[in-house]
Length: 73
Image (cartoon, rainbow, N blue to C red):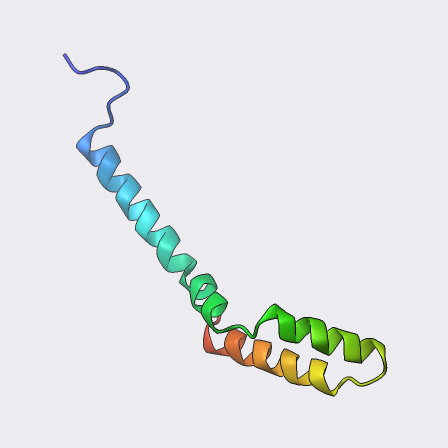
């Protein structure tokens, strides 16, 4: 007699398929994270942007946009 809380082989296989699909669907997030410019550069860009020089922020955002384009959702 099997206990009621033990999943069947079919349930386990279905869960593996579900988890693999979830991993595939979120791969772009892991890839982006590795290539985004660092937040220290963002802080510096923000500082200068608040003082009227948007050139660093524009460059930082261009780097982010490039990563997003490389790894779309």
